[in-house]
Each structure stands twice: as C-alpha cells, then as structure tokens.
Image (cartoon, one colour):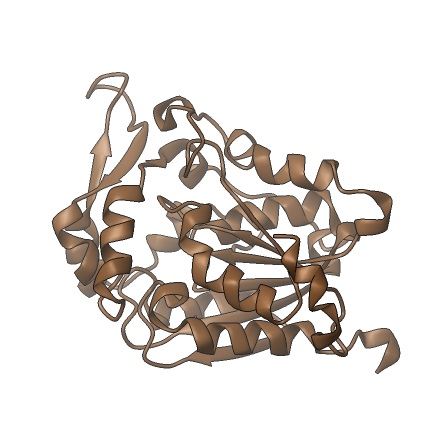
Length: 276
C-alpha cells in the first residue's frame, strides 16, 4: 500500500494522511478492497486489520474468550506505530465499532478521528448484545434466521461463536451489493466470536471521549443495523457529525463505495478544532 505516498499531494487540508480500517463481525480486511483502492488514489496511506479469528487469521473463533483477545491485532498495530506516525483516522464497521472503541480508550493520542459506519457505538458499560436487544421485534425475525449459534463446548454451555446461513446473506447484509461481492463474502465470512459480543465495554471521557467521533448512517436498506438502532446510538452517545449514505445496504464498501469514499475524504478534511 506504499503507492498512497506517491499521490500524497492530492490530500489537501487533510488532518492526517493515514486511515486504519476495522472490519465488522464475520468480515475481514478483504471487505475493504474497494475503499483501500479509492483512498489510495486520493493519496492516503491505508491499513486494514484482520482481527483475531477473522480474514487470514488462523485462530479458531470458538477459542476467543474476550474483547481484548479479539482486538489484539489492532492493539498491536498501534503499539508498533513509529513516533512519527502517531495520528490516524480510525474507521470501524458493524461490530468493528466496539472493537475500535476499545482501541480508542487505550491509544487516544494516536487517533485523530474515529468514524463509525453503521457500527456499534456503545455507551460505557454497554455490550454489543445489549445494543441489539434494543431492536424492535420486527427486526428480530430475519436476524434470528441468518445467525447460527455454534457450541464448541457442548449445547449445555454458552455459545462460543455465531455463524451465518449463507443462503440469507444477500437479503440480510448485501441486498444492494453487486453479485461478485456477495460471492466474495459468502466464501470469506467467518463466525463471530460470542464472548466479545456479550462483554461490556468500558470507556472513559478522558481517553475515548477525547477523540472526535463521526457516524455514517446506512439508510433504508440496512437490515443488520436498522436506522432506528443507529439513531438510538447517535442519540445516546452523540458524535460530532452524522453523515447519511442513501441507498446503501449494511455493506456500503460494496454497495456504495464511491459515496463512502467521498464522505471519508470529507471527514479527513474537517479541520482540527484548535485551528478553527
């Protein structure tokens, strides 16, 4: 991804020239291939992380027992940043919102802005499962059908992971996405570890709260995180600014890549409050 440096000059007025992309539950770094390409064309340096048990990570999802273990590759990324590479724009999709919030709490000085794309933007003490339990009953039917619980420790124990009914992926996640991207997802998606989903997130105003947050709403065609749920998160934990992606399903990096890219570039160019 070094090509991004060659076209750096196109990024005028950007607060930082580096994006770090965090995938959602079941996805991997592979889902960002269009976004990486578009941002690099604009002169940004882009990194996409595979969380533990996701993408090319060989770890068994059923053996992940905490949010810290799941987000370890993201924490490692920040740990290994050189002093001259302190500030990045962190972008999270879906469950990746909770994961990047964990990193925001730990590395507030290394993150200039955080962008939540139809993502879990949790309040302190809230779990992702708590969040989804707020959904209206009408949203539960398809969600219950598409998710398949895995019990690696036996049915008498708690679920260890959540897999997907591949026949329902298009309806649930990708109803506006090109067939080739649906095919890519159907062979690439992996189960979501269950323990991090039920773990309550602990964030502080001093660390997490010091980072500028932006929310990108996916509108009427997102069945995984419906607009009403996105609005509830925004109301209870208000970001600095909210953007809308009309006509997008739950995966705007597939269904509306150009529109998503424009918003990300726009967010990068919002000046720091110190200079405003």
